[in-house]
Length: 282
Image (tube, rainbow, N blue to C red; front, side):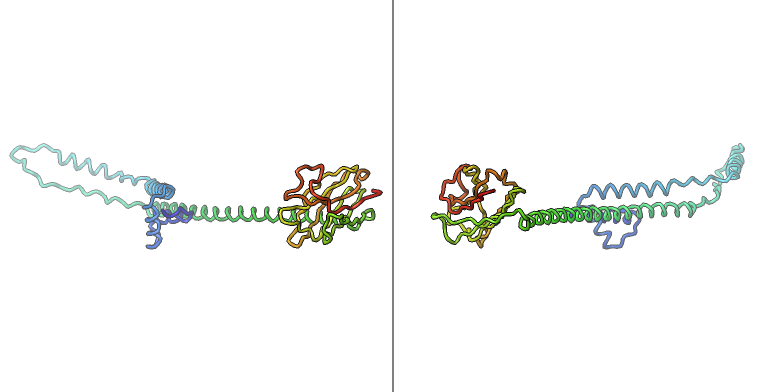
């Protein structure tokens, strides 16, 4: 079955008026033959409307003189005759005034009403298309607004972290390799104790197969996990810490080499500590 489309309503109106060309008529008849309840109902509605409009014109009343003429003929034909004179009389035809055809104005009104119905369907179809276009345009505008809001948020976030780099109170701390660490590892922390923020840049942090590097904070000498370090294909990673907590008890950042997924406990490394960066005097 061919799918119903709004254009089929316009074809229904033209079909009722007999205004379709041959290709359009075949398209609609094929569509109706396949069974479309919407188009069948629309065709019936338009056809009934056209008939009602055409038959709504007042009937033409017979001339007043006709009634008198008919009754005079009846009385004349009804005179009693003697039996011997009674013969079958030749039938006479009473000529009645020819009934006038419906006024052209009535048919013009019916045609105009049908045309109005067609025009209404066409305008309705155009309105539906415009409403669809408007809905799509609004959805696209909403998407662009969301994207702009996301970009503005990203820009504000970048500016906030850029301020950390340029801040007068920001400290630069290089994490040092431990005897258990690989000498290619490099890590540098930017730490602002007043803003309680830090950003740590890692280089050459591609872990061995089946392993992950994990970042730790040492608070009052006790480790607390800050999460697994996810480096890109080149081994580079940037970890942003928006809240490092009370600077008076944060003594250092450290990195351990753990099994894939990190330590099973967030309060103690299970693998060797490979880097440490002291924050003395923070």
